[in-house]
Image: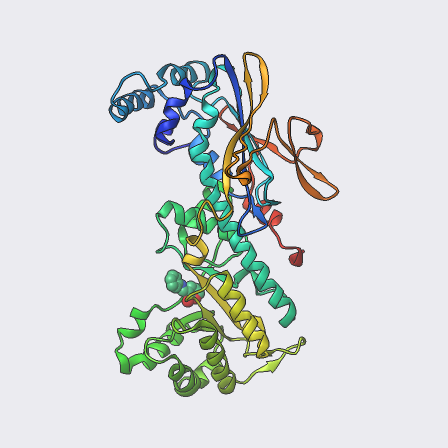
Length: 465
Ligand SMILES: O=C1OCCC/C1=C\Nc1ccccc1
């Protein structure tokens, strides 16, 4: 049951005036959402279910919300005759406050090449033609989970490629990219949505909000995991001369299991050479459980290779079945500074060139994972493609001479697989029995509830099967 805010205010002001602007006797408006393409050739369709459950499901329109919106819009527009009070009251009286809308969508987790229909929205009551595009503003926010899930999956593909080339198995893949992005997110809600999108592809996170989203909206009890880890304050509070004590404290307070220690407070090379590889060498070498050393500054590829070199000298390496060097299984490094998809490839490429297996490292990413994206990254848009006016079907479209790239699709749309290629069939010419779009929402009810496990399975890489 949707539990937050006043849906009547979750739109753009101009939409409040649009019920006056459709042709007379318009009874149906059918619109669709697509990515017109951009950074990635496809999008992982993810996150619509969050919006349906959080904002659209059940009795979302009430007399009280209508009254509040009425007062709000009289002040906002400075006049009394704009807000569609009759239209909203009709929804309360006729539909019990449930939205007379049908939404058909690609199954969550599917990877769909751009310029394909991803979901459609249409009104189910001819009186409510105006509600379809009223919901655009909220529904287009699905650009964010989709784009984060896609960016995260593309990073997984890069990591998987290097693991495939330099490691004997893919076992470490699920924990190779850890979400560090909570503090850099624009809100607790967006951190939750973004991290859940990352967790479609991975299982390591410090962004706790996303675990709650995966639980509450996709039925996943614990979608992400973490380990005890230091931050600079827990090292530097021991004083510059106390760094060895601080490191030793980490090993003794967490005697088993994995532990991560940020080691660049003063001199990460000295820390690796003379502390981890010196004073604490034997404690580390015989440790039950993994020590993860975290550099956190400097040019990432250079620092990573230098730190690997020092640790390799101090703790030894062996050569795996693919001919690449591995640190002892209880010793790894984590690079969480400056990581985005390009830097990931750069570091792993350098490691491979210098004979290191990718499994010696894990990555943390914050802004690169959750923030360095916008709606334009994948050019996500919502457009009307069909209407019924005075009982006549109209194939609606735009085709601006000033940007052919913004040309929109016509008529009722379906998505089919034709010779293994996802194809959007326009003008209602599709075969509904082959339509990959499924009705996920109708008249206030959610008709398909994807579990996080299903979404993860749908989004798997070919290399993972
Ligand atoms: O070092 C680590 O090892 C793995 C567990 C997490 C972790 C660090 N977390 C973190 C979170 C937010 C900003 C910076 C770091």
